[in-house]
Length: 295
Image 1 (tube, helix red, strand yellow):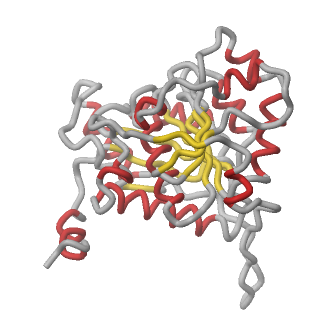
Image 2 (image 1 turned 90 degrees about the horizontal axis):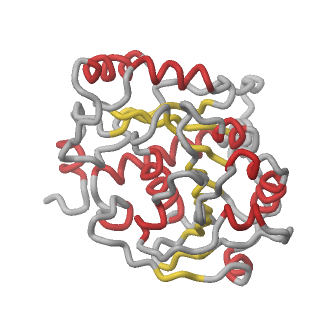
């Protein structure tokens, strides 16, 4: 954690809300908060890979949910689709690799992504991570769990559609309001119309029922949740997921906010910390030398 705190200490001397020219130089420092160690197997034994259970094949899932055409706007920051060979996407691939490594030692299927305060980039980290994992032919569902300030539907260039809020307010028990995004190759459950009583809606018990259904359908479920401070929504989400990634942004997150965010999370839930918009990276030249377009 020391390098993250060093970066945030530099940022603390500046005004918060700084905009960097390279807003998607993400995840240049990942998992510096080490995950809680799983039980160490006996010497000489390899732990079995985590089996998520009876996940259906992609063709079966296609018949359950409608397809939506995606037209990603030029202003979108979904680099996994717009800049698949960029350094930012390489960092997301590394992030996905670390998650798969963790999955060898602990149940890890439903990943919650949050931040301490707003505007740290958690939504874009969620979407780009889901897109990268989906490219590995994994059945990935991205849930827009931030019912208060949803932004992902706009990033994907899709119209407003019924989503999580409408399902929670409804009476049907079967999972619905999920869409196959043609092009990105992943499934998406938008937030829907922001409800008036978010906490009451999420505490109704229907959310737990929904997550149980979805666990049997997908290999990975990535949830973009609201910030930790000062809302209680993420605490509700964390009870239904297997682990949490905390996103911080250099030049935006103060050390005190990060510490309060970490204190809010259970240590056993924390998978790691992603430092977003890091301006101090020495890996760009390395990537350029080994990228597909280098000579």
